[in-house]
Image (cartoon, rainbow, N blue to C red; front, side, top):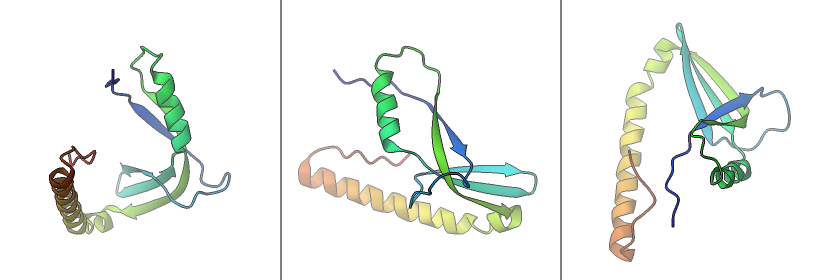
Length: 120
């Protein structure tokens, strides 16, 4: 029987100056302080996430789990520069949603199965 419980993660970034940097990031945190916005790109070890998910089967506690990620870059920008990205990002999101919906429709037509891609 499949286990459909939801698991919440708190991602904890580390200082980018320690350790070797991975070649890509797979998580981004965005925060705002006063008149600046910060993007923090972090790498999460997928093996660590899989191990934690396996151990979740024995846990009954719904509390979030901390996963430590490696920060690979931080970008700080003023609010006025961040606002200039709005139209561009909205266009990108619309294009991506369109492409994912098309791929999902084509996958459903050709295989008759449900795709694991969801646009929320």
